[in-house]
Length: 318
Image (cartoon, rainbow, N blue to C red):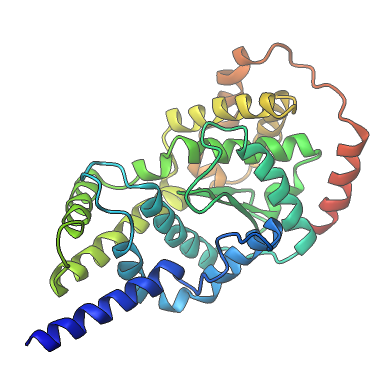
């Protein structure tokens, strides 16, 4: 009996070790090493998520099991748990929207995104911020919990400057820093999930509890992706992300007027659409009005030539 119990613990520990390095895919090399360029790591992340979609159900529970769950059970997940949740959400989105694997364009998107995230109220997340272009003509962008941000080619193509693209990314970073994704998880599910995670800090999971945890975590992923893809965030959350975007843009030297410029363009571009972004976001002109008081002027200053040149080069890959 003791021998079987010992063997069971050894298997669980082995799975825990594996799960800490993989989630939905082999995540080895995901966290940056000293000799690995950041842009390479950023691009590899979404490859690792895509490559392991078929193993999602098997890994969800195991990966979450090794999260930092010794903290008290509250309505908030720990940063590590939020990271695992975000990877699950990103995997679902990548099943609907395939990635656009243009290395130059994605590297540019990541460099710009990292610069903006560094000036947000949450400059670092457990797994870091990562940005990926989606191969879709739909005008949309998504921010998964933990800092995984995805932008469609359709959205990129209506950006006419680096400042406008920065406005899109800053808005999504605003969702991350305010942890809007976690608010999508149903209250009773969050409390039950937190209770199980607290129990893990004091004793081993039984098979039934591990199965329940797997189910709860998968359902939480479903809650967040439903919000991103179907119902959308609340109007207050969208306005809060816009306000965060204005502050981030100002802090990084981009004109905050680029946000209102993009919103007006989206209003025109989405006039005949009732799905995607048009379905999940408030009217763009309402959002323009809500941030108007934060802008000192409506006039957008001319961009430096270097900024114009690098955007022109990168946008060829959009």
